[in-house]
Image (cartoon, rainbow, N blue to C red; front, side, top):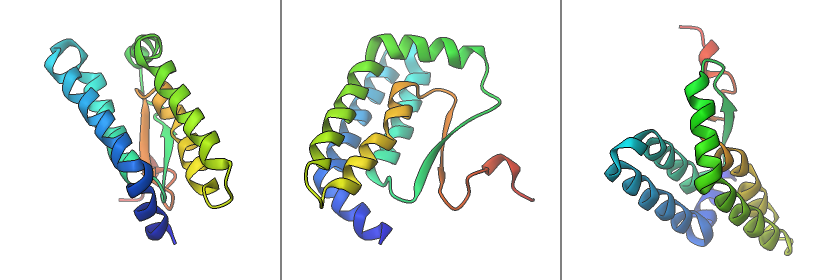
Length: 133
């Protein structure tokens, strides 16, 4: 079921959102100082392509630099991207068939609002740092 939802998502939302994040990531890489934001954009682009079966968790080892970076991201881009995900999520939730896709947009809100210090993991592995080796 996750594969079918991901394929439909890819056609109707995922490809366009991922392209937007990828372009933003390239711009961040060109501006050298914003490379950490570019890395986050590419990570989110991958998540935007295939969101079903993955979840976002907080990294407990993220430091103060992630917090400062998140504040900068929030002011420059985070609020606008988050508003876009919320509006798209509400628009998808208007129809019964679109509800899973609206929920996928709502799942992207935390990582689009503050992407640094977050990790995207499969839903079957909610604690990636505590795996047995």
